[in-house]
Length: 448
Image (cartoon, rainbow, N blue to C red; front, side):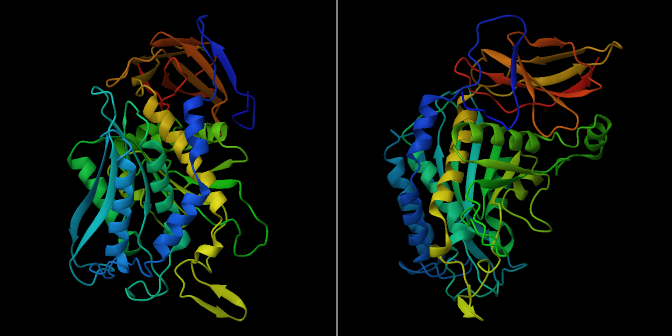
């Protein structure tokens, strides 16, 4: 069995029971293998051909501007939906953005959503994967320049579309939404509209994966190629947490165990399980230094979300007019995108989405019992409130200084007693089905 993390992961059983330990799902591996670098390249080059995808660019032309781009994206998604036996629907998410920062007049904007409905009527979970299709150059208000945006963020858009193509032909208990959003460069407006809509309509968003700038393998300051590392950014103390929730988290030393941090760890474990030559780097920030992306509006609405970005960015390619100065080429052109690397990041996204959408939902009311002074740890929880019943649960454990879960204890009950002190380790609980699909881990709260 392939090592899924760069350390020994122990699978222990409490009590003794037959259980297949962590392994690849053959169906998910087949989907992972179907993700095509050639298709991704074709999509990126097609998006670049619209010349400008600036949020404020032309929406009437059939060949240039954001209107032509979004219509083409929707038409492509509808082709994929035709393979879904009616389970995938494609729609514009239309809204009017008022005049404001980086918007010089009220404007009607459109995201594209391809919604692959879950097959379990009792499973309300929703998973989202996204890239932004708008682009920009030096002047953020220049709507008419040549703005190819091949890496920022045709790469993320192509990734979301390729996953829709591959996954539309399959079925999952939970719902998956493949998004391409607008207005990121002007102020995260497209993703903010979806996040607010999700909150208002009570979507049960379990995780949101944002892909932005996922195609470059050479950093600006080095000729060293890194085509195996990808960063996952996640917030520690949840963005939308109340003061009371923050205080409780700090009292437990749980600042590093927000739902988004658990999603980041999950991404590392699952992504490296299915994708060869991949090193998922956990970055303990919401986003890059003093910068932001489309996962932030979801965090602000209280949802679990992370951002994926290449390891070393080339800032000569981002937000640059196309030109050559002193022998240096500037501009975000497709010839500078490593399509095989985008394929690798796309495969990571697919493995995470497919596992989560196939797994049981998370256990509820996970707690660590504090009524007795003891050097053991007793946890209890309730079964998931939605979807299929788990075959069992994993209790996860790690040293307080470790970034990764180090041990897994399998149980079939909704309680577990471990011969390890709650004062010395961190714990979490996740649901698992008979095929080994795991939910996101849930960090326990103290209970009596």
